[in-house]
Length: 348
Image 1 (tube, rainbow, N blue to C red):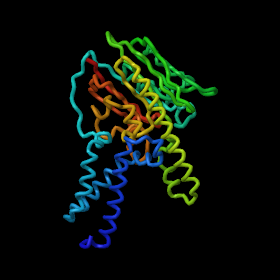
Image 2 (tube, rainbow, N blue to C red):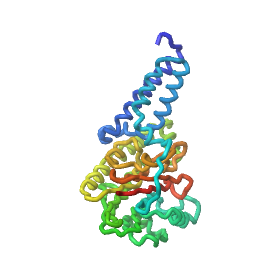
Image 3 (cartoon, rainbow, N blue to C red):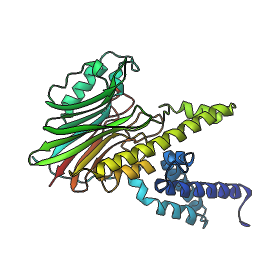
Image 4 (cartoon, helix red, strand yellow):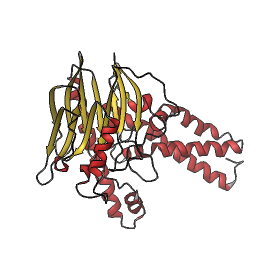
């Protein structure tokens, strides 16, 4: 420290604070949110921590300062997290007859409340689905009142709740559904539906989940306003709301995990988790399953329309005995606050 200028001493202090915060974030996927609900917010900013640590590493490297070792160590320890945020390459597989495709899409009630100022949103979504032609389609926030035409799917299971506007989750399949059901979460409007789907000689269980929303505004204005606001009560309300949502998500993830454990079939879990790939909730639901994006995606894999930040909160998890041959997200298809995702999977 003696050889550092006052400016570099300040930079080194900030570097140490960032390193400590990053290490806490590394530990959070292994810690139940109900024990540290406020700290769980840090998992939402894990990619930002990677970028900032990389900038500090380069800052010290340009000056040939040994302080770069600390940031380098943080980056090295977090290398296993990087593929959850960004994929540089994708494996190449041949398309085979035994493959099947799965699409997941939170359609935001098919725009029944006119969040998007267009009348063609439902028909545009149907056209997109018909174009991509998935074998299994999982929709979150499905609204029967939108009356969309998905007759190509002879087999379906739809579970909705509500009085004036019914909404819920739906599974559409080109293969027969031999069993179906739902998981209703306590003190929540969110739920999970599942279907046992017979594909040839195999039976595959597909879960379609929609976990508790943390209700963050897509343009991050809500975060900025609450962090910068003089009104501390407003900021506290935001933190309390996030804490409650993280606790609910933990409970919901554990309920889903327990239900999955009782299944005798190879399983696919897809849907809107409303949390990042660096969270306790993600780690619990994924278990030893394969994350479609990590297996066969490229780029950021953004699934949510969040300004300035490529948020990935929607997932397709495949049984560890399955092979994910391709994975796509469609950020250019803007007909909801989420983007569709689709995977090609094979099961030997």
